[in-house]
View 1 (cartoon, helix red, strand yellow):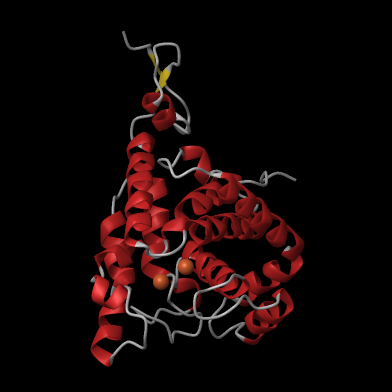
View 2 (tube, protein in one colour):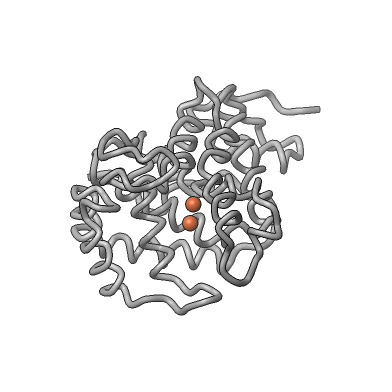
Length: 252
Ligand SMILES: [Fe+2]
Ligand SMILES: [Fe+2]
């Protein structure tokens, strides 16, 4: 017999509880939030299967973005939404053919144009008016290649016409991409990454967020290490909702 349903504020453990329900664990369900959580967990599995990006990179971007959101806004609820949503910045790439996504060499002009559609595709995948979490995820997927000076894509939006969550995810994604090893190059020293971010302040990145990166760099390094430890230990099972939770508390 199933245990009684327990409503929770955010449905954090709902999917874990249902998946491991042995009759002793209460089933926890938060209507609406649980559906959004379930969708993101499944999209994370698809992203892993399609090899869109490494799982560790996805979650480091989430943790860095959440941290920046917290220190920029002091709104812990918003920062937690950003932390959960930012891992899905590149989810639109699941719609890109393998022949382009996995291509080892340079992309042709037409292939690059196809690749540049991933923000719009990601936005469409996540579009769900009424869900705060999916709305932030949609903003990030759609806007993470926009640039502060309007030279980005897909819309060429400028400054605060780009949603804050997308401006935050853009800088978190750039930081982590350069600070970690890739198949085609080794990780940059963190000082070099910071210098590059500084040089792009006002061009690619929101100058206020650049300042937050510099002010809270020790925290960024710490949260990256915590994320790496977590994923070094993780098994290959399905994603748990706790995987999306902040690893550093958002509190003064
Ligand atoms: Fe992207
Ligand atoms: Fe990324």
